[in-house]
Length: 256
Image (cartoon, rainbow, N blue to C red; front, side, top):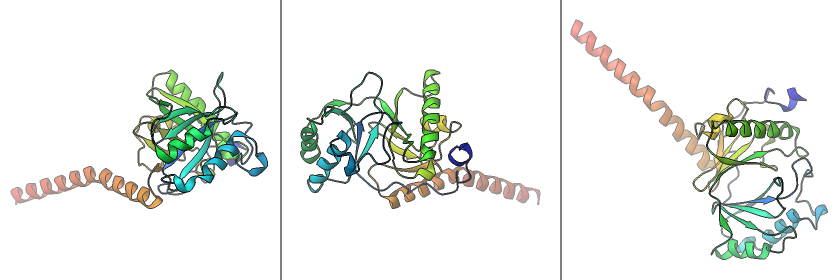
């Protein structure tokens, strides 16, 4: 299983990642259950009556009234917490819709009309796809990355953040998939391993080969951002080469 689902599988680092996130403008993270218990597709109609389906259906009914495309992802319930806490981006606010979904209308009103909602999220959030019943790769890599992130945090090797397992985000073949969200950041990464995770959490992998895109831009815009970053990375080397060539030419002229 490790060979097929782990970090050493043959497909790792085999594709360019920029542009592999479908464009959307709002991201709702819904706290519900445990990652090991989530069904393959928690939003299927066969699970009607559950909180994920209730929220999904409610958003679908008013989607034409909401500016921009909305995506819903589950996050694992933390110890001692209740189902129903929503984390909403890019607004970076949290709001409790209730375990029974009683406050979903208030959330919808905010999505349609704006205003105020819940509490600001001050912490950076790390979401790690660990949806085991959806795909074995995320089921294997997600818990490993979550444990590594918690270790790095405990050792004070990365900035303070909250770490949460999340459901399917698309692109199982890019596992480990991690999302880093905050008030001024909303970036997706793939092919993340316990060995390069620290660089991701320190921001060193921003628009690197591990970067898939970010909230609020299209696939093509992500590709262009990556191209621009590659060019910026090449400029110092190009400038150094030009300086060495100029020095060499000057030295040659002086000698001759």
